Length: 307
Image (cartoon, rainbow, N blue to C red; front, side):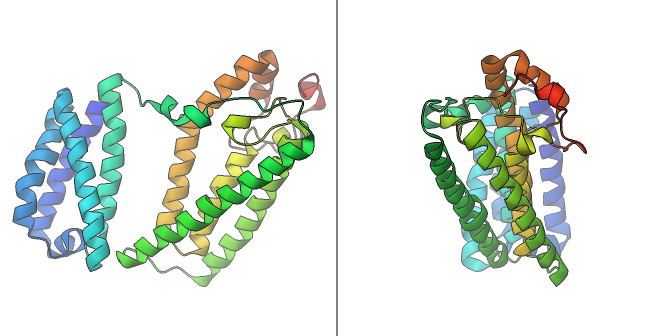
């Protein structure tokens, strides 16, 4: 709850500073509000967003709820306005960020934590794959998942983000060498992702999805160098797509994905692995880092008895 209140305090100061800049700096007003009347917007935003954040910082839960809902409403309205007019793009970006951050802070205020367990309910609940199924079924399911994930997360979503980025006029020109570098990195990350998927399907007898997780603990192939090579590959792929599209917003999208995975998905996944594999997984976790690959693969003596 303390961190949630601290965020709302920062948001209140930032909101007040932004409104001061709106009235004093015409460039800020044009970039964030376009042709909207600042006095009319301030009449609603100052009491609901700025003052609401102040009260939320003081521990008033109702104020935190109001400030969060208002942030979401303003974000939606500014997105619509910026998309129709091609102006106020920076305002839309800032309010989207404020709405997301407010929602996370609201979770801290109301429950003392962000309810990340909601992400893995229903069809996404952790379940081990059928260990007795033929390997080709696991490989086929994994291949289908890769096609869907890459098509949506690395194709459709980045293309939509880039379209909004250009429409809102918040795009930043980059040198051609950045695009080339992005393509090289994407190929390398994709190779890592495919290698990881094949090893998980054949040796782990499962798929990347929580609904059909590997039934055997895998510490071979790329898993000897880093604990989560598939997640690492996906995040690097996302950033590489951003470079190829010359889109800083897509890079931010990839970074946000890494934060969601690291702080929301990974703890739940590792708790499940520890419950299923016990000391084997704890020994593996202590030997292999999560994000930073080892220079040398984990020793065979460490892997002995795990796979």
